[in-house]
Image 1 (cartoon, rainbow, N blue to C red):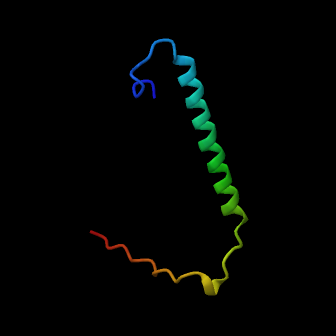
Image 2: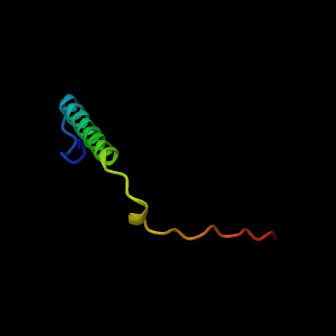
Amino acid sequence: MWEGEGRPEGRHLDHWQHAEDQLEATERAAEVEVEQIASEKPKKKSEVPPTAPPTKKVAM
């Protein structure tokens, strides 16, 4: 931010506040996403795609 604006003198508090605002917005967005995922209905077995059987490890 600071470098992008040409390293202006005396603007450090503005840049600091802007960085804090960006961080808070990112954290809020992550919280909303977690809440949305947590509130989704679990899928029925018939809706879950089959998984491959575990593979056997070969001793070397």
